[in-house]
Amino acid sequence: MSRIVTIGAAQFGPVSRAESRGDVVLRLLGLLREGHARGCDLVVFTEVALTAFFPHWYMEDPAEIDSYFENEMPGRETQLLFDEAKKLGVGFCLGYAELAEEEGQKRHFNTSILVNKRAEIVGKYRKIHLPGYDAFQPGHAYQNLEKYYFDVGNLGFRVWDAFGGRIGLCICYDRRWPETYRSLALQGAEMILLGYNTPDSNPANPGSNHLANFHNLLTMQAGAYQNCAWVVGVAKAGVEEGVSQIGQSCIIAPSGEIVAMCASLEDELIVAQCDLDQAKAYRETVFNFEENRRVEYYGKLVE
Ligand code: CDV
Image (tube, protein in one colour):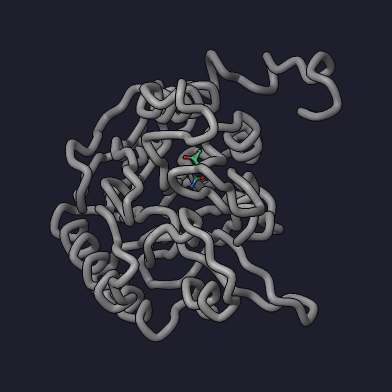
């Protein structure tokens, strides 16, 4: 048996600080339409897709900071994306900076949503592993201030029954942590969608710079194989506001094999027909969790 979902991984080239939301949405619409023309059920966009990746620089003015966040979804500019998705009958996954109000407090999250073919939001995830610092770092060629701009996500790792399978979401730095994939796999995730903004250098550990691309694929391929899930990783690539970011957006099978990968550092759509039953085959054999996991030996943290 096979359950095919046709996935588009919509890599995004740089977004300049001056680019308007409206212009960014037009670029996203172009990729969504291309996805439709190429038979996609679901198009996956990147992390914080609607603006430049602002944690790469320091801002103090709360109003300026909030201008990078969405306080409604869909909002004035993003409504176009929802309308087009509904018209075409194509779902999408979108990362954005979310401004929420909870218990009378402003909260800032690095968020992604899963939207079905009727343009309904069926899943929402707020990034849990936040990389970088909570204060300006003097001497660094660029900043990495996610702990300064964002609150830790408070929705947990979750999966949703959608697109004929069980889908999990995570975001960027989450992909480096085995607990992310395992939390989702223990809930039956057959496909994990994620966007990333990954610089090709690390100011705190320049000795690892030459491994940026290798570590990107290593974590996602291992996550896919060890957890019997498709992994779709989508970059914001190229030089954005002086920060050079990796590409390598790719679609990875539960075997750990890459079935499609972007070649450029620009807007580029790759498409693959993903058989969700391929995950089942792995889960029933080599990674039969019920039969082979040895939770009693793993310690409290991974129970
Ligand atoms: N946006 C990210 O989460 N970026 C991290 C970098 C900073 C290590 C990543 O894992 O790619």
